[in-house]
Structures are given as structure tokens and as C-alpha cells.
Amino acid sequence: MTAEETQTTQAQTTTDAPAEAKADDKPAEQVDVRNLQDKFHGLLDQRNEFNDLAREARDARNLLNDQRREKAKEIEDQKTARDRKNEEMKKHKELRNSYQDQAKALIAQRKGKAGAIERSLPLRVRKLKGEIQAALERQETTVLGPAKEKELVDDVRRKRAELAQLEAELGKQKAANVDLSDTDAAIDELFSKADEEHEKVVAIQKVANEHHDKFVAAVKEVRTIASEADKKHQEFIALKTKADDYHNKAMELREKVMAVRGERAAEYAARRKEIGDINTRARQNISDPKAIEKANESALEQLKKGGKISFGF
Image (tube, rainbow, N blue to C red; front, side):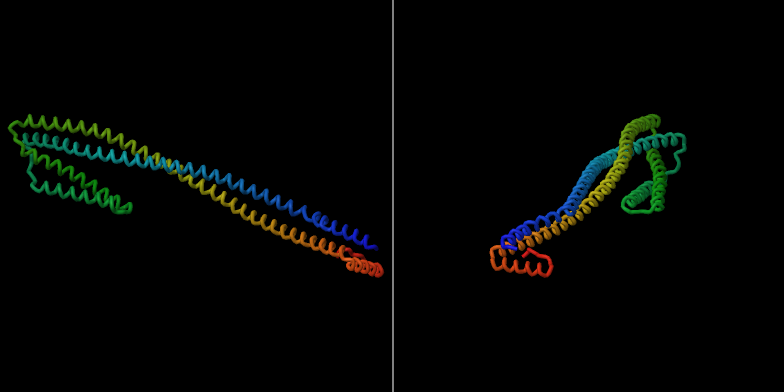
């Protein structure tokens, strides 16, 4: 084989080697990476979709919580207004009852049925009022079990009934000291004042009942809103968990894609280096007559031995 043929063969060998390497390189790995990328983007799309749904649930929950806070303020306002009216009504009730009791006491005294005066009655009334107030403060400031709570409420109810009776008796005592020179006129005036106070009681009670009805309605509405807000919160948590799951899966797949790309890049770089080395040796051999002669001798030796000839230097 001549030097020219050797050079031609070496050039063909050098040219063909990278082409074969590239032909073997592409199919499976490129398709696999594309599939992984498609799956990765699909997971991101699902993550974003669940994140959007989670945001909608969160916004709905926050809106409901805002409504609940507004309603809670309304509840407090209605309760305060109702209690204020009840206190006002209570004062007019006491005046009404006092006028009525005094009038009845005058009538009884006129008929000789006034009864004996119990001088310790004012002290008992003050003491009983103090006990009731102390019990109410205990109820507001102390955490009690259901049984203790019921016992305390029943005790307050009994003491209030007793107080009402004692105050009625005290009213009779005061009436007994009234100048009886014009008893009929005094009785008429007392009943007239009692009627005026009763009209005030009825009017104030109507307003108090309106506030109470609004209070009850707001409480029911708050319970409904709170239930809906809790449902939206649970929905938000479930959707956010789903979104996080898809995000984690996408990140895992991303790591896999990066690993495959790294492997491909390393393999591609190694092959490029190998081809570059072959081309470098070929160029060196072509320009070196001794190397060509040595290659020819090697080829002849191989032919003599019946072996194969390699032109890759």
C-alpha cells in the first residue's frame, strides 16, 4: 500500500469515526430527556393550578373571617345597647313597683291591715343585694363546671326573688309613714306615677327586645359564617398540600433531568476528546514520513500474518 493510499484511508477513517459516534449517540437519551421535561412541565402546570385554587379558597376564607369580625362587632354593639336598655328599664320597674307597693300599703293601712314594721328590713335588703352582686362577679370572673354554674345561677335566682319580696315590704314600710290626711289623693297619685313608669318600662323593653333580636340573629349568622370559613380553610389546606406534592415531584424530576443532562454532557465531551485525539494523531502521522513508513510496514506485517489492518493511529 502506497503512502498516498495510506493517507486517503486514514483520512476516511478519521472522517467516519465521529459520524458513527454521533449516529449511536442521539436516539434513546434525547427522547428520554424530552419525556422527562414534558412530565416536569406537566407537574408544574398541575402545581400552579392547585396553587390558584388554594389562593381562591384562602381569599374566600379571609373574606368570611372579615365578615365574621364585622358581625362580632355588631353582636357586641347590640348586646351593649340591649343591656343598657335593660338597666334603664330595671330602674323604671323599681320605681313603678315602689309606687304600686306604696299605694297598696296605703290602701291596706286605711283598712287597718298595714302590719308590723320590721326595723331590720333595710339592713337585710342591703346585705342581700351585696350577696347577689358578689355571686354575679364570681360567675363572670371564675371558670366553673356545669354543675357549679347551675348551682350559682339557681342561688342568684332565689336571692333575687327574696330581694323583690323584701323591697316590696320595705315599700310598705315607707308608705306607712306617709301623711294619711288625704289618703285617697295620695293613692291616686301613686298609681298615676306607677302607670307612667310602666309605660316607660314597656317602651324601653320594646327597644331592648329589638336589640336582643338583632343580637341573636347576628350570633346565628356568625356561627354560619364561622362554619363556612372553617370549610374554606380546610379546602385551602387540602389544595395547598396537593400543590406542594406536585411541586416536590417536579423538583425531584428536575434533579433527574439535570442528572441525565450532566451524564450526556460528560459523555459527549469524552467522545469529542476521543475524536479530537484521533484526528490529532492522524494529522501528526500524515505529516511525518517515518510514521507513514512505519504504518506501511505494520500493514505489510499484518497482511503476511493474515491479520487485519488498522489505520487508526
